Image 1 (cartoon, helix red, strand yellow):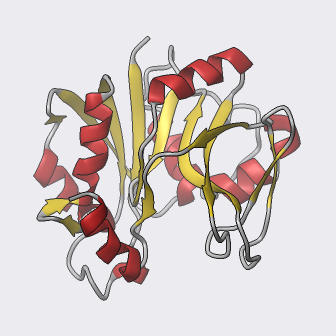
Image 2: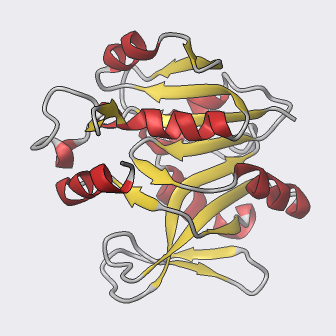
Length: 231
């Protein structure tokens, strides 16, 4: 089974604009390297052979930098002419994926250290369409908590704003390439709110609890923190 992934790299990075003015968020410099290279390095080290970059805002900057290959991995570009939301962007990118294998999906502004083959093993054991990584944090306020039942199935997304420790969505998924086939979805939609949360009783996402390094560089404070974390 070949390992393949989609990296969502089309965001505007509005909250990070004060630190990174002329680059797409995934190209923000971390120790003089584009942040997305750390994600690609991790995928390469774990045996991935093909990565689809879902690009939109300043797409040419990313394409010109990487071309069609990175450290032996084939790079393919899913170019959004207008923003499609996370769900719409993934659906378009999945059309370029190998249909014989499930596909990992990563947020391009989040670093999460996980064992991808372990996620795949759990995914296959449950014969599910969607697995999602969760991460324990001391305060769920910024992210919103995720509820999981005793069988390891995600049952609810809680609104942002609650305080206290708990599990959050860590932004890495493994999904069947035909996951959206039986749902009536608009052209633009959010994976989390419009698809998963709305159809959670049908999709029944399997939770994978990640314990490795985790950081979302979407705000200046964490953009500064990641410089040390990934040094």
